[in-house]
Length: 369
Length: 250
Image 1 (cartoon, rainbow over the protein chains, first blue to last red):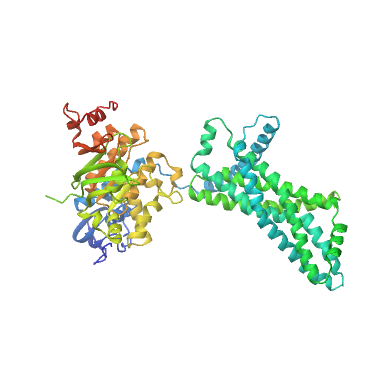
Image 2 (image 1 turned 135 degrees about the horizontal axis):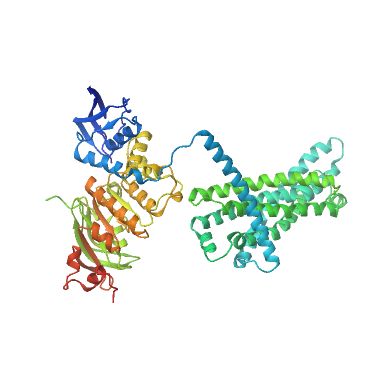
């Protein structure tokens, strides 16, 4: 256990002409508080007295070095009065200070400019990543892309079948919630039977794809981001670049294709589960299963179903891109990987909602309903 | 005669029940620099981890600052480790912390000072290794040589009486390596720290070591000890002579 300081660290000041003498007393160790720095007059010369100095460790040279940094530039320090060991520590700390690659703090206007430049750079990087992925897909179409197909089956499994149970559960529960809300509101005007239309249409057009997208952001985007971010940390992406591969194409394209292949299917399952959830509630309220099914078939047109599928494909692109992009630009440390996973989920879900709103406007404009 | 800071007697170390090197006996006096040398795979790093108390030895005894490692309970062992600094080959800086935070962490856990004092101490230690201006950078933002120096600053955080340095110059260019050697010598002279280092960089060993311990991968033993010039004599251990005259092992 560290020794506890018996006598607190303290000092007294005495002026001797242009010289300021600081008399150190007590224990100057890491196990007690150190006193605040004294105010030093510009042009003064600091000397030390150590007659009453008790126990000492590197806390004293650390304090002296801090005082030197805090002092006005005209103050000079004479360390001869310090014990040789302490003097050695202080001199050692100042000996190599010129080689540390330090940075000056910038004025606020320069910091603002730097922030603007970095923000712009961040947007450009995102756009550039989309471009690289698109280029990778184009190169794939003409048979010139170098893609890691070896991990494709595993990607299909982790993004598809592994995600099916949670997608089914959330789809089912979404249907249940909507049916309850519908039963309460439609029941007031005796139109309970239209709960089937409500649930069927909402699941097919909106909620099936959206809930699947949200689940995929939480599972798949974060997994992509943390995996690719870890590869950044261990310089695996640099190693790919070093042998002439394009990491975005090599790693990003199979991920994009895997999500594009399975997310629309998951969305179909989620839609079906939601409709079944609604049916469970409707049957509980006295409607027959056949009645419910007939209403759903009548309400959900092929076009409605296609609407959901189109959205699911777009959401798949968003989910895959958010994960790959945040992973590729992750900072090269453990915190960077964590941030990449978090920001991938946030970015993905935000873009899903924005895209869903855009689809609503577009489908309305083109009367696609 | 002061007590040796580090001592071992007939020490044997290894992995998974397999002995890598045995029969190691030597002592490190205060302010002395001892280099553990030998070809790759001879057990240098394994020996040093055991000497520093990071891994248990398979046989024999070792002492740090007069305490026998095998005779300590867990709390005593942990307390002893706090009086020892260890610089890892790959620096092993915590990547999510800044350099100053890396140095502050041991102080936060084991010293009783406040945040202001910890910051002052961290800046002081980083100043000692010439990294004061990089205190708020993350490990990913600095060069390999700076990371080595930051690892050294962290090893110095609790004012260790003994420093263990695992391949301090490995992977560095000759200029950076020479600067790190200068720094280690200044630390020894300024702080009186005893240093045990593992290296196969002969120029570095020549500059730093008061004496060397040569581990022979063939016999799996400590084959020779002495000053570098002793290893260059015709009657020296042939493997050690080859090592120091920079010839390949047969």
